Length: 231
Image (cartoon, rainbow, N blue to C red; front, side):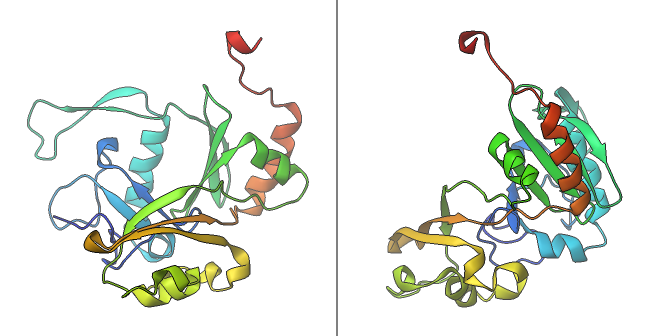
C-alpha cells in the first residue's frame, strides 16, 4: 500500500505546502494514473512532479470532474457492481484559459485555480481583494501534521523550513520555496515515537497572470454568499 506521506508520483517525502504540494483524499475516488494496478489516489503530490509527468492530463480530467460533480456514482476499480458513491465539490467553471481554469463554489466564497500543469490553488474572498490590489495572496496559517521519514534526533525544532526540506532530501521538489523569505514557517510540536511533526506554514499563492486578470475583474461584480441568518 502506498505511503500517504510520500508523493504518489515520485515516492519521496511530500510535506504539504499550499501552492507547492497538496493532497487528494481517497474518498474523492479519483483514479490514480501512476499506480501499478487500478487504485484510487490517496496521498500527496508535489506540484513539480505533476508538471513533469506525462500522466497529468489523465489526473486533471478526473480531478476537474470531481470539482464540478455533485452526488454521483463512480465505477468500481475492477468494473464490477456495485459502484462507489462520492460527493464532488459542486463547483462551476467560470473561466478557462490557455494556462488554467477557475472554478467557483455555489455555497461559499471559495475558488479553485487549476493550472494545466496540474497544480491547484484554493482562494477565499480576502484573496480576491488582494489580487484586485495587485498583491500575491498568501495561504491561511494552519497546522499540518506530517510523519517524517527519519528521526531528526532532536534538531527539528531548530530547522528553518528550507533546512527541513533538505533533511528530507526534497528541497529540489519545492523550487519556489528555496528562499525562506517566500514563506512563514513555524514549528509547533514533534512526537518522536511516531516521528510526527506538526508545523504551520503560510506560503504565497502564485497563479497564472490570466487567472489574476480574470479574478480582479470578477471581484468587481461578485456578491459574497450570504445566508438567511446573516441578512
